[in-house]
Image 1 (cartoon, rainbow, N blue to C red):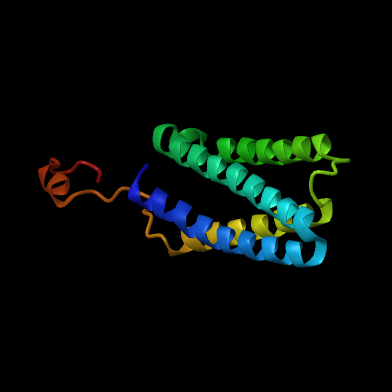
Image 2 (cartoon, helix red, strand yellow; image 1 turned 90 degrees about the horizontal axis):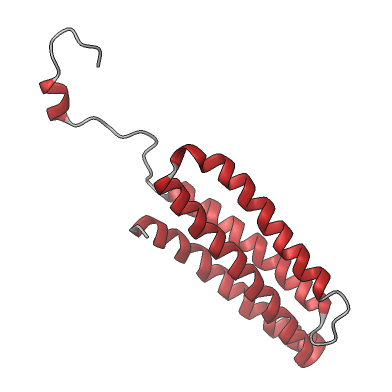
Length: 145
């Protein structure tokens, strides 16, 4: 993982973890232990799905840049389907408070997406590789450059 990829992951993970901690406290205050557990499960699910997605997308960008946009769309669809399967499996659960889970999942997802957008806007990622000065000098006269 490149340093800018790790930095992006960290810039997304920290605000999401803080949001999760706040959600657990609010869930425990409003719904007791099951609310805290629901908020924790929602935050962990968001963190796992989004972090794995970010790592997969970064590896795709590095190794198969021509598939980057298609992989992003496929990854987004897969993330939504994974969360939907989780929701279907735990639809009628009594293990945790489902409302605390839902609000924590929503809050953590929105914070992750916002942090990821901010991280990409702040990153100094080149769109093209600039030519080196030596490559221009060694080009034959009259060749397109």
